[in-house]
Structure formats: structure tokens, C-alpha cells
Image 1 (cartoon, rainbow, N blue to C red):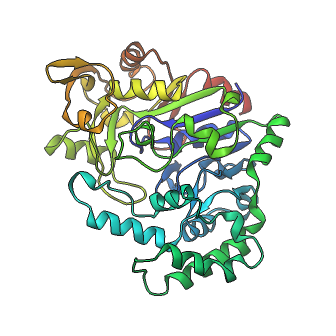
Image 2: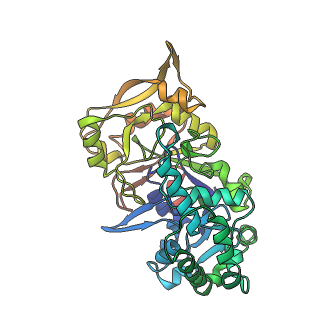
Length: 420
């Protein structure tokens, strides 16, 4: 096993950042292939908390190269703020795709305007970071890429005109255009040497024998094509997004590990069949500290959903599970798990393709074995039920928030252990 990919199997917030961080010790390069500052990955090194939004978690490991792929959209202020939080040696290991698009002030203004004027079924619940409009402009072939920022004269002579054209009919904050020009100039001057053709960079390192880890942001149930459309993100967080988001062939990737909590969460609007509310939800939210790393919003909470996992397994051609936040459910004799749906008098074990159907299903729940204090041994009966229901083995178990609170099973015990 040489190249691996880590994907979220739910609606994001599964704990991918920690899994990527742990596995990064065994690779040479970590590649983020989609999304932008709407994602937030958190890792605890001891009691030190680190939250990154653009940068792959692998950048925290000495000697590991970090690639921001062409499938990403980059917010200049956010990128500069993050770069300031990592050592200078880490910045020297940063590689920014010249094809990655830039989030500009009219994207954020458009995002806010759309959410403010939408209601009911039309409200998506975005992070209001301008991600969707930036991807729209990319698809319309009118976007600005990082490669443009480093071209002589572009920032000073052409960027303002581009923003004004994109902002037609919108009310930008006072000084937004000048502020954006200043930030883009700073990105060029501070990080211009890190902007490059990362597709060729990855091809060269692959030929030299380097090991890669591909990191998806958010979760595959938010995939633009295969998620709960229209309540989705504007890119492909699933394994299917690796190719178009990095320029590296997915045929070369050996193992896809999917991250899921032992319960589910969702931020924003959209159907959530296993969702719970009231005091039970408040208790679970508090125990798991379920508040967004990017927005701070309280997350909706519910139980593990097997039909949704089966959909994610198929979508990602999954090889194994990483189970996270199992310690949150310590002390429960049994744990509710949604194993099927009932709709119109019929029982379904598959995930509906239409959000309206998904919003109408009634979850069918079973009680699976719980544990006292989480460990590889105590969680084994639950893991066996999960493996029997899905046909996918558990390869990683997170027993707490810290980096060292992670149990690696095969194949990752050998994969990481061989490097350590």
C-alpha cells in the first residue's frame, strides 16, 4: 500500500483532520483536493489545539509536503492567516496549485445575499464564505486563479475590473475592492514562489517513489452530484473528486479509508433521517462538543445511519472505516443505529436519490452493543455489527481527541508502524 485517500462518509465533521494527521507520519505528501475555508479540520497534539481551514493537516509533520490542489478555492485573507500560524519551515513545504481559484469579495457578498433572501426549501445553510459563488464563476469560465495573481501586472491592473464586473448589482462593503487587491498582492509577494503546476509536481514525486495521502474536506453526503442535492457543497468531497481536484489518477490510489463518527451530525439545512432533538440531542451535542470549527454553529445530531453509509461505501469504493468519537458514547449499554427506512408502507435499506424522499422517510432503529470505557476490546462487538451490516472492516479507532488516542489496525498498523 503506497497512496491512500481519507474521505468523510457523512455530512462532514467526522474527525477527518485527526485521521489525516495520524496517517501523515507515514507519507511524503498530503494533498487537499477540493473545498476551501468552509471546511475546518481540528487536531489536538497533547492539549494543544490546532484548527486549519485551507492547509492540509500533514503540514504539521516535519518533512511532509502539503499541496493545495487545483480543485480548491482559496480565500486570500484566510490563507495568509493560516500560513502565519505554522513555522517558516512548513511554508517551504507548501505547494499551491496555479489552477486553484480565488475567493473574492463579490463571491462572499453574493453568498450572503442569496441566503438572506432565501427561505424554506431554498435556504441551503452555507458557511457564507463565498465558496459556492466562487465555484460558479469557475464553471462559467470567468474566475481568477492563483496563477493569475503571480502574472506581472494582473493584481494592480486587472483585478479591480474583474471584481467590479462580478459585483454588478451587489453592494460590497466599503473598501472591499481595495482590501482585496492588497490581500492578493500580499499572497503574491508572500507565497508567489509556492504557486506552481502541482499536477506535474505530483507526477514527478510519484515517479520518484513518494507516498501520498489525499484529503477530502466535508463529507460525501454533501457531494455536489451524489449528496443530498440541493443541500450540498459546490465540489466533490468524495473519492471521485480526487482526479479532477488534483490531476492525479485515482487508479494509482491503493486504499480509501472512510471516516465516520459512531453517531451522525449535520450543519445547515437538508434532510437528516436519524436526527434527534430535545434533551437527548442537547446531551449528545454537549458530550461531543458539536459546534462548527468554521462557523461555531451548533450541529444537528442523530444516530449512525447504515443506509447512508452503504451509499457512501459505493460512492467511494471504500476499503475500510475509521471510527471516531467513540469515547463520546462511553457508558451506554446500547447505542441506537438506524438500519433501514420506512416510506409509504415500504421498508428500504438503500439511500434515496431525491432529498424530498429522504426528508419523508421514517428511520428504523436497532440497539447495538455499547461499552463502558472505549478501547479496541470494548468497542469490538459494535465494530463487528458494523462490519456485518456493511461488509467493510474497521481499520482505525479514535478513542479520544488527542493524536496519541488512536488505535491503528491492519492495514494501517503496518503502514504507519513501518515508517515509525
